[in-house]
Amino acid sequence: MFDSLTKRLGATLSSLTGKAKLDEENIQEALREVRMALLEADVALPVVKDFIGQVRTRAVGHEVSASLSPGQVFVKIVNEELVRIMGEGAHGLNLTTQPPAIILLAGLQGAGKTTSAAKLANWLKTREKKSVMVASTDVYRPAAIDQLRILAEEGDIAFCESSPDQKPVDIARQAIDLARKQFVEVLIVDTAGRLHVDSDMMDEIKVLHDTLSPIETLFVVDAMTGQDAANSAQAFNEILPLTGVILTKVDGDARGGAALSVRSITGAPIKFMAVGETIDALDVFHPDRIASRILGMGDVLSLIEEAEQKIDKKKANRLARKIKKGKKFDLEDFRDQIQQMNNMGGLGGMLDKLPGMGQLPQAAQEKIGDHSFVQMEAIINSMTLGERHYPDSINGSRKKRIAMGSGTQIQDINRMLKQHKQMQKMMKKLSKKGGMQNMMRGLGGMTQSPGGGFPRR
Image (tube, rainbow, N blue to C red; front, side, top):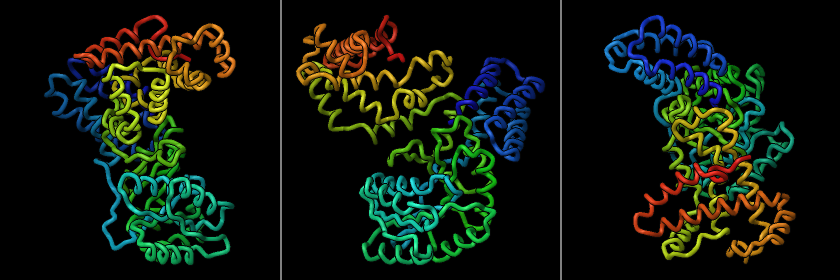
């Protein structure tokens, strides 16, 4: 998300950063570029006008003129205004009520409410250690109830059975009764997608809301719908007292206009964003971190949090003990590291959160892809256990067999073995005194040596 906005703003703001003085003319030129960047990102026009107005007021005032580095202050102002329109600070869920705390999900057809219900339930279960139940009142879409049941089974989450021949209000009452009997802490109710112009469906969800009395009413919105997201959010906000927003399909949109519009239009904070298809692909929305990523400053805090959540600590500790004892870093260990990286969204997902990586030329970004990691894992999977533990035993005939089994070429296997050797050397340095400093020097060599460095497509 925000790829196009990041590139456009990055080019505009970098031209100002080094200037010793900003005058009315170059500020106006920069503001024109920022305005075009926001409109191209499909940000709602009223939001763009408000944003530009606030930046202009601050930029031509005392803040910039009194600064020793006015270009940097201008970037700082843009950053702070981005945070402001997205809602300052992360907003958690309010669950302080007599159990079960009920969360109602509403939104347009195809916004991703059902998957969001499962993702939110999984997040509450794994991160907040809550007992959760999900229920579907979508009696209109074929297999909607079955879809939620399957997702609930995947996450080992309690599910309230319902059928298409029931009325949504009856399902809601049934879900509340079952959640109380099972002493569930949080009940998440999925609803049918509805168009805001459909008065009957809008009346139905209002009745559902009155029946459930949810402590949280979350509007689920597809990030790829741009300005339409803001319009529909406003319509729903007039019918329901929205307490927050979940942005879905964030990973599929390069513009990000919905994120910059919904909060400003509805006044309801964006609480979560769905960043993938798996049940654990849900993140808390941090406006300051998102603004930082938009401006190419990275998001190291989110990267650290993701590592803490997704890295297999048992495997990491086992590898650390192995290296400390001076044992060799073999291909089984190498495959584990590839899998750990894939769990964190791959190399591309990690680099997206590192400062300055968004400003790399397109050609350089294309070379840093995840395709080679998939290929390397396939190569290692085609080896025998003995070959993985003793890579030096892999001769020419073994390479031919491995290439046949993995659908690769012998030069791919040679490249992978060379990269493993480089990693093995770094791990060896880690086990010695001053290991971290030695490893960093090794990393520098790896990224510069011919045939080494990041895997290439």
